Image (cartoon, rainbow, N blue to C red; front, side, top):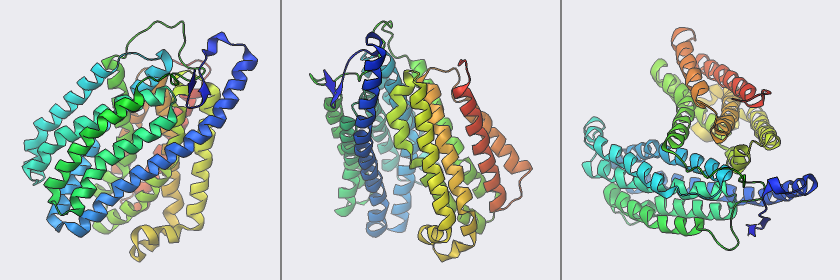
Length: 422
């Protein structure tokens, strides 16, 4: 049997020379998969950016603000979907195919119910149309449930199908919104169409994730002698908590800047944080591709992934040092050129958080206890340092963020590579 062109044979049953050959074949296959997943990610991001661009041209300022706020709330509510994907992928890689749909439906339903219950509060607190906040529930249901099938494809290392599923999900999530905005349907009509297309994309994802005569776990995957234990709600909650911790720590400095700095400084920090997010998300395809191998406890794959992410980060930091002024001019305009000298620090913070994200995924994939604990501790330290020690300047908040990212990356690296792992 093969999976996207990679032979399927239980790793534990083969001699060492054959296992090494399979790993070499896997490296070549991962290169092609990386290109496909990167292209799918770029298309997803392009569609996501197209929504506010069209909205700015088609909607009034109040309507645009309302739609942007609801989309931001939707992104927050979708966090359980990312956690579900990580949990399913890691379980699938370790244990092979097992029933996860019922737990995924429960996770999506609970998330949607919480979103629905919060709709009246959000409507009043954020001055939003009630129709928009009510539509958050079905939109969130579709996005979270999609994490189940994405996780199955990722755990099986069927990355070509995964890239197709990512494109299908992006077309569902954003395609309806784009069409609705282009037709002048307003924020409610556009989000309603986007919700419908998002729900219609789910059968496509289920079909892509379905077993085929040429699909299944990749070589070196599930242990054939391992007991068949199903995915548990605790595992999903653990992955969701880790995903939430990653989101919080990566945005904490931006929120602190908003709270501690004057309006001009806060705006400048927001512009610089775009460089941070760019350096953070640029190498995330590496984490996506390596997660199943992390679930197997493959130390070689972990070290290689860490090396690739560090190399990508070093390249981005060097580029920002050389072209910091150009970067700030493109991102924020000439009003923020006085911060160009800080561009390498913003990029370095994002590059270090990329390391943290990969190692946090590693801890979730290998079943470590309390995988998100170091991130929550680091977030608390960042908040305390920014409030009690750092100067109330862009440089002060940025220094706290950089030190936090470096300390957390070092601590997570020690946990990952220490001789005996818990």
